[in-house]
Structure formats: structure tokens, C-alpha cells
Length: 230
Image (cartoon, rainbow, N blue to C red):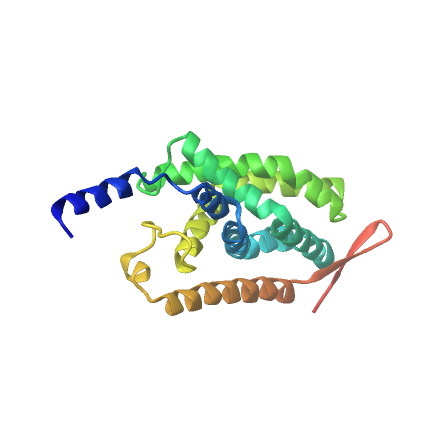
């Protein structure tokens, strides 16, 4: 093939229009089955991480500090779990992502800055959701007010834990790397990271179950509350 023919072929290749199918491929990546799968995967990971990291704390507050009966506390935690997996988990985590973008908070921001953001975000979320949650779970008005106030008061402690766990689990499950994790953890194999994530969930469940088991249960009889020793 001569130089002229080569130049002609190159010219034709450059002039070849983009196939009409390309936009559809792009749309499929954004909105197709793969995109749906990624969305659901992140939803499950975000929900599981936030729930597992805070479950023992809320169980302790409800069961020990406020003295809620086990049945009421378990119903509240179960309701939160169902709502989170249904839709609220993504609302919380993706709302947090949006809030971080609005306030220009990144994973490279100071740890104090990220903690302040996660605290304020959780306080707003708890103020909006807690009253309805505890009312639905059968808590008395006094228990409802107490639990909501306690959730707001402990937000400076729980907010950073929840935020960190979301970032950590995204890294451990391969969704998104996080510079917040120690380097030794970031460089673990995918299999080891998955085992670490599973271990965190197991520890959370064991701690929560232990709190219920080791504290006296309370049953409401008429207008009184009777403690039932284990």
C-alpha cells in the first residue's frame, strides 16, 4: 500500500462519524442493569455499615439508659432496619454525600471537620425521623421525647462513627477507596477485607444481644412497669 493510500485510509477513519449506538451504550452504563446493580450494592453496604456501627449504642441507650422494655427497643431497631433496607439507608448515606459536597467536605479534610459535619447531619436526620419511629414502635410519650433528646445529645459521638463506618465499608467491599482507613487495612486483599467487614457485623450483633440478655427486662402491666429478672 502506498503512502497516498495510507493517508487516504487515515483520513476516512478520522472522518467516520460516531455510531448512533454509542449514546445508547453511555445511557446503558448510567441507567442500565449494571447501574442498578451498583446502586443496590452501595445501598446494601451503606445501610449495613451504618446500622452495624450504631446498633449497640442505640440498644444501650434505649434498654439501659431509658429503661425501655426489650420488646419496644427491639421493635424500634427492627423498624429502623426494615426502613433502612427499604429506602432510608440510601436517603441517609446519599444525603450525607450531597451535604459533604455542598459544604465542600472531602476525605482529605481535617478529621475534626468531617466529624463536625457528620454530627450536624445526624442531628438533623434524628430530629426529623426519631419521633415518628418511636411512636410507631409503641413507646410512651415520655420515652419518645427522652429517646429523641438522647439521640440528639449523643449525635456528636454517634455521627462521626456512622460516617466513618460508611466510608470504611465502601472501601472494605471494593465500592470506593477511602483514605480515612489505616494504610495496613487499605492494602489488605479483597477477601481479607470482606472478612473484616463480616467480623464487624458479627461483633455488633453479639454486643447488642448481650445488652438485652444481661439487663433486666421490663414488662408493662396495667399502668405499672415491672422488672423481670433474667
